[in-house]
Length: 157
Image (cartoon, rainbow, N blue to C red; front, side, top):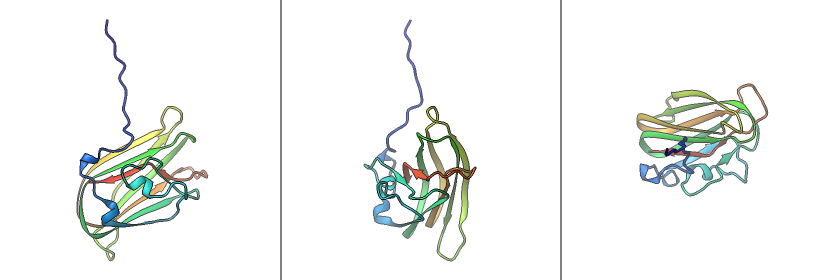
C-alpha cells in the first residue's frame, strides 16, 4: 500500500507573479501604531518576513492612500498568531476620494487557537475601480484582551 499524508500548505509569502500592485511606488501609508522591530514595510513589500506589529494593544488601522486611482481585483491578507488564543475581527473599506465616506468591503472574524490554529490566510476577489483610499481595521481580540494587532502580509492585485 502506498500512502501520502496531505495537508494545507501555507506559503511564506504570496506569489509575486500575481501582478501585485507596487505599493512602495503607488501609495502612502498611515497607521495608528507600529512596533519599531516590525514596521509596516515588512507586511507590504515582497521579500520581507517579519510582518507588521502594533506597538500598543487594541484596535489598529492601516490606511493606504494612493497617488492616483487604482483598480483592485484581489486583496490577500495573512495573519499569524502563535502565542494567544483569541478571536480577531478585521474590516476592509475603500473610498474613491478624500471627500466620500468609506464603503465597507467586508467584515470578518476568525479564531486563533495555538498551537493548532495559528495562521489565517484570506484571498478576496473584488471588483474595485478608482480606489484612492483602502483601510484595514484590526481588532486583535474582540473580547477586549490586551493583545497587539499584527499583519504578516498584505498584497493587492
